[in-house]
Each structure stands twice: as C-alpha cells, then as structure tokens.
Length: 196
Image (tube, rainbow, N blue to C red):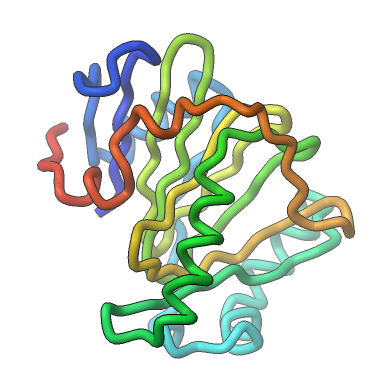
C-alpha cells in the first residue's frame, strides 16, 4: 500500500505523519515541490516481465510523458528476489541497495513509475525527512538537487520505469552523510501500521 511517513530530521523514531490517503500524500508532497500521481496499471506486467515487455506494455504512457516533459532516455530498473534466490543474486542486490541507501542528489529531476512491486524514496527536505513508499501505479518526480536516498529492501521486488532528460542516465552526487542509517528501513516501514 502506498504510504507517506514524515519525521523531523532529529526524531527518526517519532513520525509527525503517516498516511496512505492519496489526496493527503499528494498535498504534502506538492507543498515541497514533489510531484506524485497514481496512474492506471497494466495487468500484463509482473515480476517475470522483461524490460522490453515492460516498455512495450507502457508504450503509450512513455510516449505521452516524453512528449509532454521532454524526456530523451527511458529505461527499466528491476530486481525481484526471494529467500530462495541464488546467493550471488542476493549479494548483488545487497551491494546495489547499499549504494542507493547513501544520501545523494541529481543534477536533473528523478522520475519513477512503479510498474510492479515497491520501494521507498526518502526525501531530506529542510529539517524533515519524508519517506514515500511507492507501489504499483505510483509516479514520483523528485526535483533536481533534492537530497534523498532509496531503499528497495533486503529482498527487492520492484520494476520501475525511469525517465531522463540526459543520455547519461542515473548519475548521483553523494553527500557523505550517514542520515539514512538513522531512519527506519524499507523492511521496517512496510511492517508498520498506517493511519490517515
């Protein structure tokens, strides 16, 4: 279930807000310049879908967003693991997760559409940290230079379409902060009860 959790940057154990109400989520994120939308999902995309199948299935959405927003590069980020996954895949996922858990920024906006599964974007804005648990159908656009990190969990299960205005793709500038280590992880957030 899509959920927004907000904390003071100095109080990672006491949320000031936790909600799964899409209207409230949209309002809270819009107030800090983050675009959030719930879009129609395709039933033909699941954990077994290849990148080509995902791009083909969402071709109309991709074409519309590229035409209206000027994106020039579109790709698919996906990881789907279970406890039975081979050890080398689990190690690869652990290394990828560790990289994205480091607070960073981008010189361009970061746009993700979740076609399957879920992941959490943590946005460090001013004196607050906003954790946006994105699930299938969520579109999130984080403005350039917004300090953030991403957690896919210990057993990642997500397929996200990524949109870029530069052919360089994903390029992060890491802050060196350890703030991510002080806040609840994907696994902890997905087990927490939600409230509106």
